[in-house]
Image 1 (cartoon, rainbow, N blue to C red):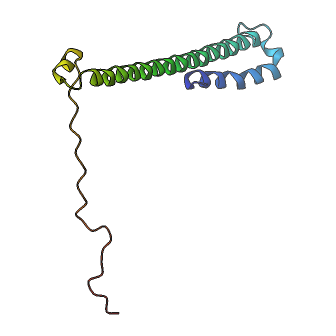
Image 2 (cartoon, helix red, strand yellow):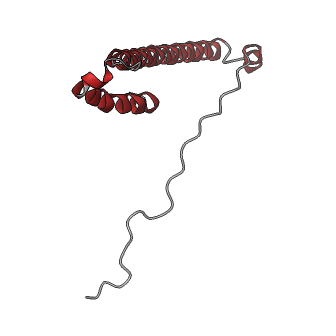
Image 3 (cartoon, one colour):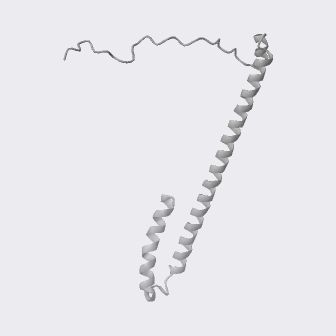
Length: 123
């Protein structure tokens, strides 16, 4: 439960118990146990509505992320096909607003020794 709903509900529960124990004193008052019960029920209802809204929001966020992933996958497929169609003529890729791919180059061999050797091994 959200704090700004939980705090007032907690503040109503304890006085309600006192009102029930001393019900003879509260019979002719404008503040009744029924009003407290109604307020607690209203708080619970509002909390349930908020939780349902959170769940719906999370579902919509998940749907939007899935849609975004699908759109990116489709764009990747289009770019790959365009590269295949116009591999010989890279200027045509400008019509698709696609940048040229970098030429592949082999990775250089590591120059640093990964395992240190002992300089003085006289023990």
